[in-house]
Image (cartoon, rainbow, N blue to C red):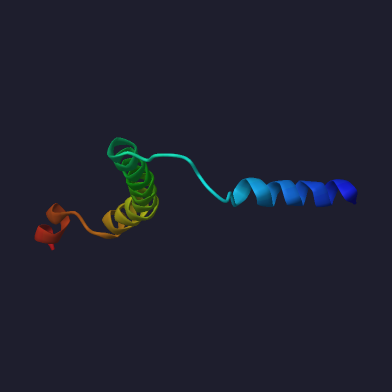
Length: 72
């Protein structure tokens, strides 16, 4: 029980520091924004691929070829 309290206190101290003596320059800030946008973009593309391509295949399978339509 004592160990749990110690771990919780240590987590709170390291998660919420009082002062951060750090400098985030324009290069690091732009790089961070680029990484975040890249991750969001790749997740969007993956979701699009998982949903769109099977749906496209299903719609293509249900459609008749044009050569059969002209013979009718």
